[in-house]
Amino acid sequence: MKSLFAAAATLMLTGPAHAELPFVKERAEWSVPQKPFHVIGNIYYVGMAGVSAFLIVTPAGNILTDGGLPESAPFIEKNIQALGFKLSDVKILLNSHVHFDHSGGLARLKADTGAKFYASTGDKPFLESGHIPYGPSSLIDTTPIHVDRAMKDGESFTLGGVTMTANVLPGHTRGCTTWTRPLTDAGVTHKVMFFCSISVAGNPIAGKLAYPTIVSDYRASFARLKKMDADIFLAPHGGQFHMEEKLAKMKPGAPNPFIDAKELPDMVQKAEAAFDKDLARQQAGGAAYVPR
Ligand SMILES: [Zn+2]
Image (cartoon, rainbow, N blue to C red; front, top):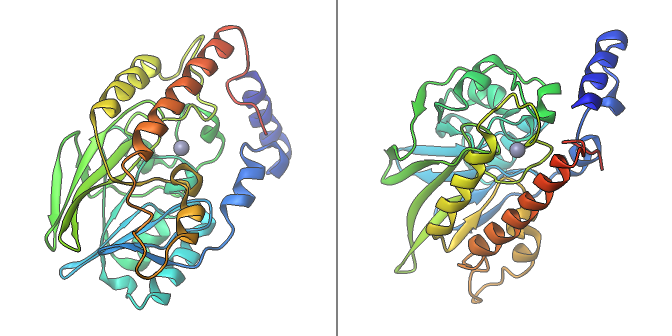
């Protein structure tokens, strides 16, 4: 945390100093434009190469999950339009979690589409203030966005025959929301998961904590994820669901590579091992956030 406070102090003294902010290298990689594409059924990918946004098209209007970085919003809008859909047809905006790389573009997307914004009760205060008080993202504020409907764990909504359920799995953020829905394609019903995240990602998890229950929250979320299943696993960063590799395998007549029931259990196993390793490192005095 010391280095974060030092970075904040530097910012206050000298104004924005780009190199002092967290995730500088990652941010450039996440911002590479991505051609939008059809995933499966009524789901389309409209995000950047490194931060996701998914469009779900229904006869009653469309649902958009995540807004990318603040600078991603115009690209997401262009991607929606490039697929032939109207911005004004986006009726509901969702968020996986309140980190600048997934919620940063939402305020502009809400203004430009006129959509209602649904988010978890746990992340609502931070979305509405534009500031999260813990983790490296605390140094990067976003435009505040009004939450029109605060969703609790297990609550669902339906639009145009699509029912989305909020599974609040805290840890990565307090209100980290994994959205799930059934989808029938070519006569087969799938379980789709729009995963939030469960990585440590620089969150302080040892010592004096601004989010005191963070470790037990992560543990409970790992336990719940082990009991969940999904055969279409989609996530907020392309690398988390092997988007590039799967996209390369998309061929007419070939099985849809986005159908893969192993992705979720593999991810949970790897993420839990990484969490244990990071916890031991932080307990031994290692800094929570280590720039790449
Ligand atoms: Zn995050």
